[in-house]
Structure formats: structure tokens, C-alpha cells
Length: 261
Image (cartoon, rainbow, N blue to C red; front, top):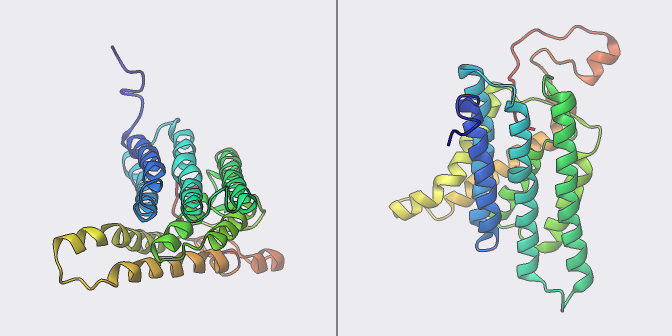
């Protein structure tokens, strides 16, 4: 039997599909160990950045943008929502606190819905732009995953943050794409958070706090971009809100095309 996609999809598409598979594993892991699930979400984020790099160097296909959004639904829509839902259900029960649990699960479902809507809008309108409208799903998933690894697992806090991200993903706040060097730094820190447990298993030289240290660093970087990005993170040929209002010319530079959303 000949598979239809053989010869029609490229290497970047294969990385994208792997991203979706990692998202599924994160959902399964959330029912067992939230921190493993959080690291898998970060691994999916690394894969999401990698497929853009591969696409720029090896070429892409017409199916690439659609595959990317579909994969992101799994990894940065369903997986973070499942992570929050399982943390909530581990700490509270319907019998003990039915209103809060139902509300928390409703917020997780809303997060998935807004992530799907945002990714669809991104593919239709923002994929070829240097900026994107609404909080990127990858950023929202990264903040939630880093928070869980750093120990911020209070159900009320996670539900509140998830609700805020659901609203922000559907907002009109505009985020410029990360510069190449900044995306690299973010990816390195994400990778450090992912591999630290392996390092602890391999040797006792690494201090116990180093894993959470990287998680706090990732949380600091991602929240910094979340809060400051729309107003202060401009460049690479993109005009800031002030420059647009004053009619100033933006500086010319090469922008990073990121297939993620």
C-alpha cells in the first residue's frame, strides 16, 4: 500500500507531525505526572521552533502551515488544558468542591476553544506576517508548563492563569515575532529544563535546585515577553505603536519567520 503523503511532505512537515505526537504524549503523561507532561509540552515547543528552521533551510510544502496549526492544537491547546485539568482533579474532587472543579474544567475547555480559534485565525491572516494578533499559543503553553515545573501548582492560580490566557489569545494585542537570537535563547533554556532530570539521573554532581532554576529562568523570560513584548519588543523592520503614530520609518532588518503560533 502506498501512503499518500510519502513524497509530498517534507522534513519540516515530519518535525511538525512529531510535535503533534509529543502533544498527545503530554496529555497522557498529565494523568500520571504533571511535571513530565510539562516537560513534554516544552519539548513540543522546541520542535515547533525547529520545524521553522528546517523549513527555511530545506524548504516547505503547501501543507506545512495547516499541519503546523493542527499540531499546535494538540501540543499547545489540548495538552496545557489537560495539564491544568489533571492538576485540578488531583487536588480537588467533584464530591468535595463541585462548583470550583466544574468551573476549572470549563476554563480548560475554553482555553482549548480559544486556542483552536486563534490558530485558525493565525493560519488565515498572520502566517506571512512578522507579527501576530493575540497571545501566541506556544507562549501560553510555555508559561503554564514552566509554572508547573517551578512548583506553582495551586489549582486556583492555574485556573486563573488559564482563564487569562484564554481571553488574551482572543484579544487584539499584537506580538512581534521573536528575533533569531532571542528565539535561540528561549529554546536553549527550554531544552535545559527538559534534560535536567536526565542529568540528575546520570550524575549526582548537579545540585538538586538546578532544574527548578532553569524553570524559573524560563518563566521569567516568557512572562517578560508576555508582558513587555507588545509595547517594547519591536524591531527587525516592524514599527512600534509610537513610530506608526508619528509616521517614522522603521529600521530594515531580516525577520525570523516562525511557523509556530
